[in-house]
Length: 96
Image (tube, rainbow, N blue to C red):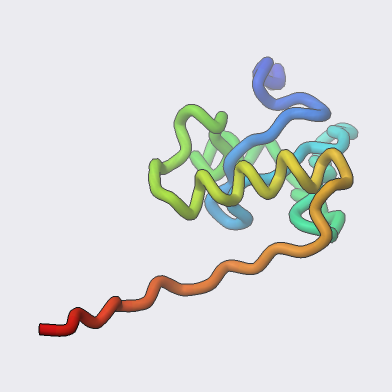
């Protein structure tokens, strides 16, 4: 299988399992990526692609969480992000 143009080193993609990831390298079937401060591996990128589990960012689900993950991945890829946490949404009480 030929690897798509959007699935290259130094690009960001969306993984249904990991969210927005920064690709470090693709060596044979292994896709090495960075998520936050961790380096991880997807062992069969072709299978993940064929299963619909890897998508270009422009096909990722649209919600605020994905947007924040993308921004965090940009800062983390440039070494400017010290830490990042996802804080669950909270209901805001109104005073009547």
